[in-house]
Image (cartoon, rainbow, N blue to C red; front, side, top):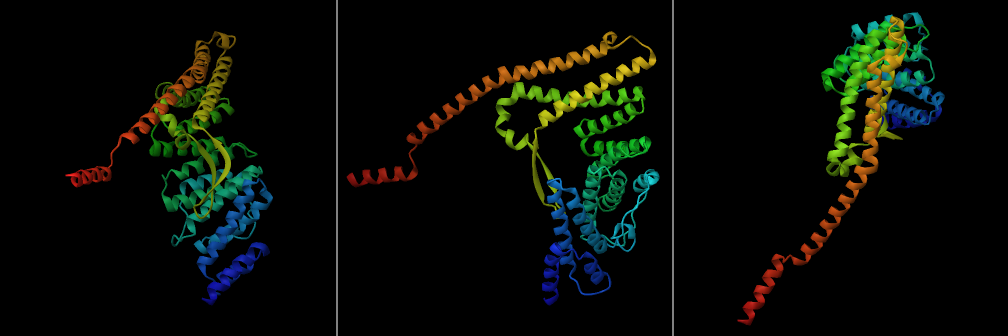
Length: 388
């Protein structure tokens, strides 16, 4: 009990004092420090980093993430095997980025056992990578994304759907490094595409996003033929989703609108290392997001098609391409349907819904006066028997 109280007090003293070195020395060299309390300290530091992250104070969030990671590495057995991921500064060479990514894709991490801190370590790596990417320190960001990927694949399996998000982020970072690593980025996007298809099927929004990312890579390499191919595939998925939403809005909105607040609104959240979530205040509606993605992919496809035609010397511009005119017509048609829904269908459905709701209330009010309860019937029957 004494050790428990001492560790608890040590945790709260550290939050204002910055004594991770001393705590880890005590733990690594055999002094009695409660592991659960030490892990709670790591969670506390991670969550403070999240709060600073939400406020966009990245210089204040980084030290908390790094100290949290040092403790989790020690608890999960990663510290002894990888000194660069403990308190020592991480030195990453841009020329090693390709090798680092390939290693994280092909090799498994060496762990003696999986502890309660192992998966949480990957989460802190992921948050560090995100902050470094926001600060445009892409080499450090890639290092932490690779570490997170190796740990998550070791614990959750190679095809777990959460790894697809890591792979997408790795591809995005690779495209922003000082030297272009487009082929390695393509490998990350393809792996993310494969996992997304396994989890969600071929027509999911995450699949379309991976296809769009691949199209962007080839577009930046001026390989417009492949870019158009991937843009077409991404556009077909977004168009299908967009069409379904418009059809639902026009035909079934009367039944589904009452569920709008729970089903159609997704809030951006930050996941704490304990698994809790903090709502960061920004919310987006999937209808709007898919509409924006459809417009974005449509524009990218038209531009890539134009560049491909100019490169091949076919036509003098977009005016001679019937595919471009069809894409433009699709956008105008969808905009017309949106206006029809906003200015015609929605007011009519609102009036019908209000009428139905008013009628329902009147019926319920009338029915409440006409109901004879069981107790009323018994009382009336008893009065009749008294009169006889």
